[in-house]
Length: 183
Image (tube, rainbow, N blue to C red; front, side, top):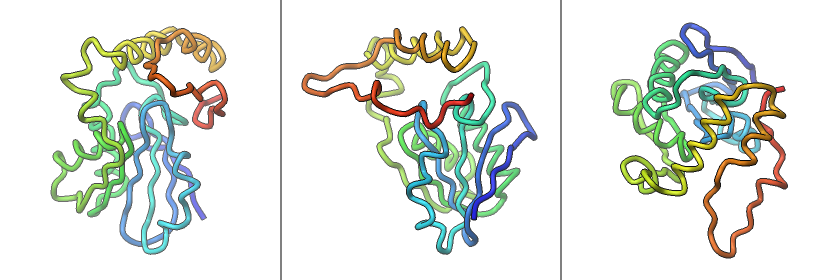
């Protein structure tokens, strides 16, 4: 059994779910995803764990924000951990969530017992992103988000954002269902 709540002690407000009982385990998603992405894995990790899934700023049911720097995400999760968990925990992060997990562990060494980093983008982001296809994609995503509007309008604008291409790899995004969008 899980419950959904809104962490609104600071801006932006963050949507999260809690399942199970035991040691705290926080699951952090990657860019353009949401906490609901972890649902297929649950309830397996809830045996002996109190599992928190979090929609990071601008994702899923969490509020939009004016800035989307990795340091902003880290600050959000630091506040969330202090306010909602306030106990030693393990953090599992995927992609952007892995970068955030590492940053939170550095900020809260007394609370973070361990981190699991799934597909961290340390070699493709950071200082080496300048001039890359990823930078162009993120700028396009930022510009689409700044336009605002409905999910349909933002999705339409995102269709024109540049995306990295690799030979022999088909872009599956046209066939995927947007589980993490808000109405």
